[in-house]
Length: 333
Ligand code: ASP
Picture 1: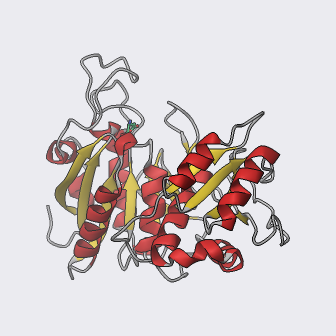
Picture 2: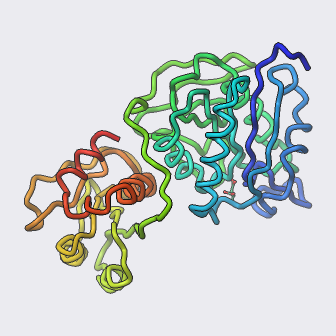
Picture 3: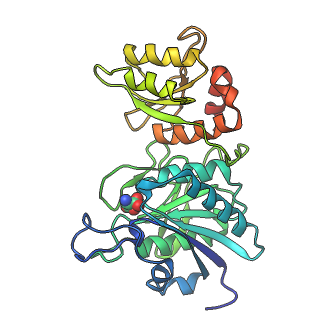
């Protein structure tokens, strides 16, 4: 280990990359979040040729169980390490299930003076052909790369580099599960060579605050013959915003539209995303319904749109009554 190598901090949160199984041939039956980060780092001796690694176990969870409290802790640890003068970059290990949501949260809240690179694995650490070790090594290589500075939060898996805002998990089990349907990958890592082919968009928009209090924001879907019972119950329970996983180009079933229109009239924000998995949702022409509009999430999928809506409503609860301004913000971020 050389003092001349860049210092990279690995913040571990759990996931399949830290998973283990008694049956190395199975990638379906295992327990996520069991292997400590010290062991994950030791399992990749080549890391010592790339960086001086400092590992911190921030959490040990299956990311399906992600909570806002952990996002807050993670943001604080990223902020802490990014300010240390000799830290060249930060790598975050995470479960794949909700990685895109945490990536979106960090993208929206962190200024990233040094590269912040998330990585994960589709197969547990004990699996035949585990993908975690190479993903970890590639993530460290990207975090140590000067060209990665100023590109916001990045996600590295399967030799590809993705922008946090654009990336999504698009497959249940394949090692090439992570895709950026609207933007494509920013670049790739091959045999230690880091190549950026594109610049990410929307990385210079002002960052949003990490909330102290989180509003209730839920995702609902539009499909054949939906009921309105759940929406009415959620409004009565204090929900402040809905993201609709709408059909096609943001189409909302008339039954849902009536329930959501009533919610809007009570100051609840309503944002339309698409359940198709790709494409930009048409920006509505006001007034529809009377008194406001169902804002377009642009090209954000429902879960990423929910993260943005959470942060915007936490910063300004009155946005639920100002759909024009909310639309402007969704168009910017
Ligand atoms: N359930 C796991 C998690 O998200 C799946 C994975 O990491 O691939 O933590």
